Image 1 (cartoon, rainbow, N blue to C red):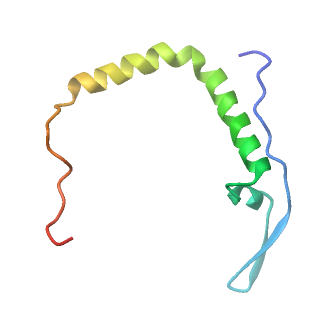
Image 2 (image 1 turned 180 degrees about the horizontal axis):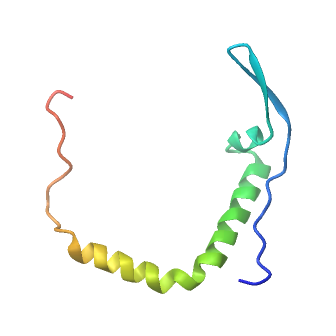
Length: 84
């Protein structure tokens, strides 16, 4: 994990007003899901996460298997209220 650096989101000050109060949101640009900058940043975050959690792959599989083995599988769906 040495030498691995988390991506840092750029700061783009954006004024937003809520109920008469104006605030500066430096990360509002991340709300634009289709923006190429947002997509690139999220891909960088995902790559970073994959790299730093790679050593946990075996543990992840072990935990998943244990949970699956303790889960009683049925052909039933999730219960819902009638008329709701």
